[in-house]
Length: 478
Image (cartoon, rainbow, N blue to C red; front, side, top):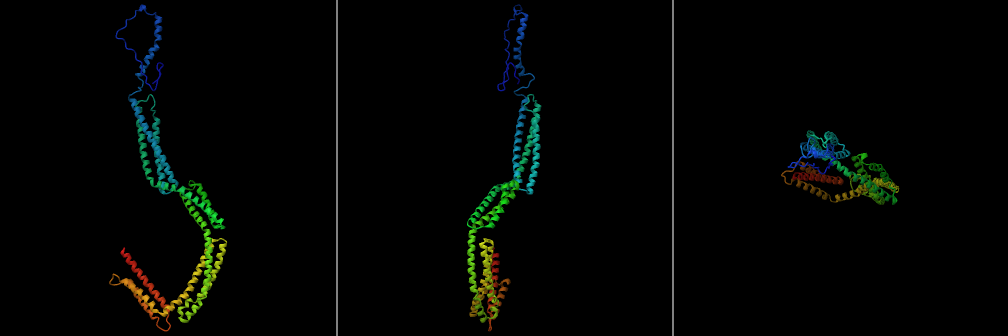
């Protein structure tokens, strides 16, 4: 509406045009010409009244005629429908744009963590979908730019065309949004895996930092007690470049690599911390082992001196087969003790130099030497004891072996009429072997040691048969 000099336009209050007064039903008497105003004066009065007549006529002209109606009409209805279509398309555009932004964040999360073929395929699919989104968005923007729905002289046909194009753009935006939603649903596993790794990232890096700090503090404590711990200090210093890379962040080195680095640094730093905390205890343990092994070496030296009398008695009372394999025991004991004492001296020097790994290895060597010597020295005395027992009463060894054979035979026949040949054959062979061993005791100089080894071998065979029977029956029960 356009303002007039007679009545300004007010957008909030509609102007009601002033109507002319209807003519009176009683006609006024016509004035006589002779009493009227002179001609020039009458013309002046008529000219003066023209503005008032124009002011009264203009509102009526705006209320009708060929100008656009402000309230109602086909053009206004089409304008309202086009505006509603424009608003709906704008809402669809905003919703699609928001969903695309959120999905782009998800894609960036996946690419930051995952470089698998599935992740690369998801990135390619998202790029193709983004092109579809751009096409639909351009179609919507072009439709909005092509129609000015606020124009005063908007025609009904233009409004109708605008509504159709905007509705088409909205529908296209909706279809692309549905494709985007389906694509987002398919990203669930990849996104979950990526978010899990990202959720682990910060705690893993922090654990690595705390582990390095704890290792450094434990090393300082160990040094404060007078222990150098040079090897632990070198291992801790080697982790410094790894800490630098952790501080640079996953953006530079990648999330999987940073996670792996953080876990490795944590493990190595915790190992350094544990060893540093154990260092005083380890030093004390090495000191105890030095004293203990030294005492044991001295005791074995004394025991090895008793091997020769034992061998002398074996030679005097039994056949050569009973003692020949023990002839080297005295020399072996002497040599082993000598080597053990030399390694002990080296271990003591390594302890003084705080070479803990070397000291530990040398002490293990000493222990192995002393164990071998102990077994050899004990074998001589044990041999004499067993030979004395079987010489006095060989029947006890025979009955012990026969009892084992009979027990195995009863187990083999349990629940059966005939034994399984796989069980019966070795048991029969064991019986025959025992009879041959007993027969070997006859004569003036029986080989008691051969008899003892044979009975031990028979009992070992019987034990294997019993274990086989029980294993097979246990499997059948299940």
